[in-house]
Image 1: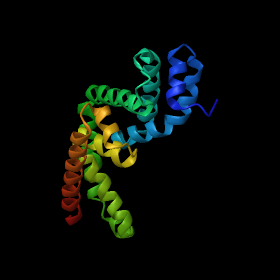
Image 2 (image 1 turned 135 degrees about the horizontal axis):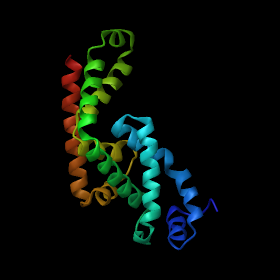
Image 3 (image 1 turned 60 degrees about the vertical axis):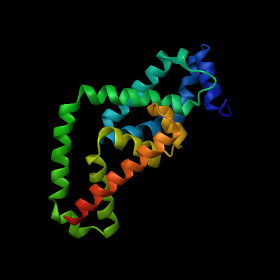
Amino acid sequence: MNTLTDEALMLKVKSGETFRLGLLYERYKKKLFGFFFQMNKDADLSEDLVQNVFIRVLKYKHTYTEESKFITWLFKIARNVSYDDFKKNKEYRHQKDIVNVENRISSPDSIEEKMIYKENVSILKIALQKLSYEKREILLLSKYKELKYKEIGEVIGCNEGAARTKVHRALNELKDFFLVLEKR
């Protein structure tokens, strides 16, 4: 049972063996949680969004095809769930993010007490939050979830070359934000 590929399991779910969705859930809940948590920094919300993804997987199981790689199809759904939540709570999160960034930047005690490595990680997290939602999402898919450019392109609806360009541009913008924050 555990030796079935993700694609084979999803085809079984599609054919009516919905109990097999539990195994896919176990395989992907941590990856999805990490993706959502990096996007919104809210553990409770991230858990809810993971649940929403699998509800949609069940609801839209008929759209899965044998040609699709399961992880790509799953992250397309995750992306849609994330966008829907983002649009629904956009203003609230924007205000919360600004307060969090201001608190982190203005906390001199933490900068003095931490090693350079921890300081850079902190600055990087702040810089990542300064990116637009789309650029942050692309970097998370590329660097944290280690999807290939082709898979990222399938998730966001573009070709491999365009995905590579978007990742490169997002990295450059992240670097610019990091350098500005580092000088503070």
